[in-house]
Amino acid sequence: MLEVQGLVTNYGMIEALKGVDISAAEGRITCVLGPNGAGKTTLLMTIAGLLRPRRGSVTFEGRDITAASSAAVVHQGLALVPENRLVFPDMTVRENLVAGAYTRLARNRGEAMADLDRMLERFPVLNARVNANAGTLSGGEQQMLAVARALMTKPRCLLMDEPSLGLAPLIVAEVFNIIRELNEDGVTILLVEQNAHMALTVAHHFFLLDQGLVAFDGDPGAMAEDEVIQRAYLGSAGG
View 1 (cartoon, rainbow, N blue to C red):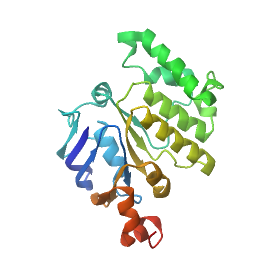
View 2 (cartoon, rainbow, N blue to C red):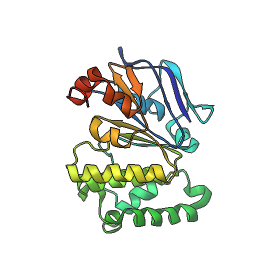
View 3 (cartoon, helix red, strand yellow):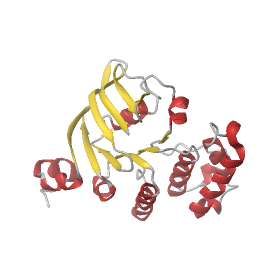
């Protein structure tokens, strides 16, 4: 469904991605793991059209979207849930959700508003605070809002950047339950995470990114069987 080949992306003179090849199969959860500075966020931002690569390609459902704008990427069916949530703090929960549907409003406002109602039904915590400014929500509530806002674009593939970052363990578990449910509903997910233990409970396939390169990829069982990878990324000696 999503293919990234030979991707090189720079920040000025710094090469953040050095020729990355990854893929995300339709209907699956693919995780990108790795330490801080590995290039994980750069990868998602490049796929989403927020950064331009120097070389390489991004293909989605057979279409080359390497040079597409971020708005065009959304139109193609990809949506990003950014790191640190980045909700609009001075807008209400409802207004944030409407903003998520901005590409759809001109075509079919009625359908978009019906989806908004479905989002509020799916996320009761948002329904309870629908008229509150997003900046007054807790971190977990803001993460739910960021996910719901992305879903308002009706994506076929959801890009999620560190959804567990800064959240309490109980909220992290809730977020990962939502990830499972979305995937069961047919949404393909490319998930970037530092919490490898949690990510591997939902992943069908994973890639390890280190210093801008793919260091390892396989299914979660492959990581469990590799002691070197276990020590480096999970802090254990296997098992």
